[in-house]
Length: 109
Image (cartoon, rainbow, N blue to C red; front, side, top):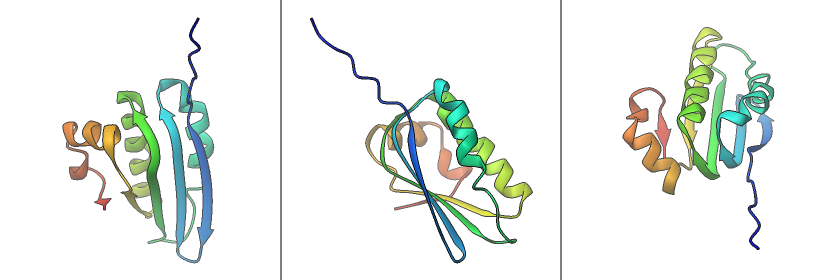
């Protein structure tokens, strides 16, 4: 008998002067939209404040997860915050490349 381990989305938020870093890990799917709402509460700061998603520990993202990033982009724009992604790799990179995500949110290496 095999066991399936579910890897839901986890996050850590670190704030420094001028930058809020949100590190995501696990898998980002439709079931995580409530947890992602908690992440969105960190979207605050003066105009130009940088919001950076660190995705280096994110294993996968589905189309709903990609949609959550677009919601974050829209909120950042509304609040005049600078949003970017970094540490995008493996399956997450492939998903974002297929969706041409770099046209919508800046992706740093």
